[in-house]
Image 1 (cartoon, rainbow, N blue to C red):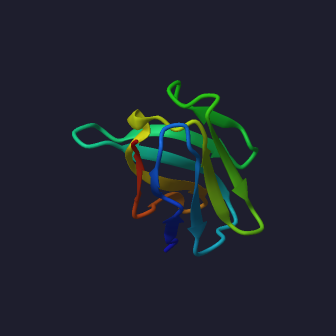
Image 2 (cartoon, rainbow, N blue to C red; image 1 turned 120 degrees about the vertical axis):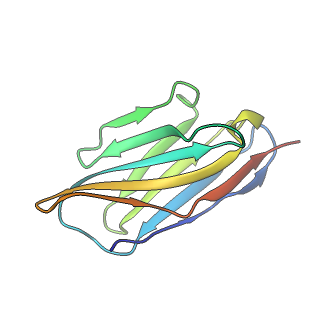
Image 3 (cartoon, rainbow, N blue to C red; image 1 turned 45 degrees about the vertical axis):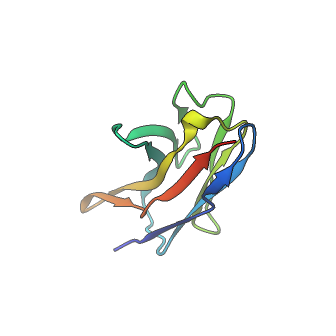
Length: 119
């Protein structure tokens, strides 16, 4: 059972930056996709960014050019660098890893970290 531990959330003024981290407790030797989702109050959870083991990335239109997803395979940790933050980026951010194993898909989520953008 892989545990994902997030860190790096907090409060920041508009225009500021934060970097979220998601550390995985185990290193499963299989292809996986890592992703960050967010959920604002009263809204559905939405995909923010995703990255594959071949480093292909996908971003929501609302964060393109401002957010960057990356993975450090040596540290078994995923990151979300968030720049030029806006009040509408305020949400709980969740990391996710989806492993494609010989036993099938293994889907793991972090506990969530609050990001608040406010002046």
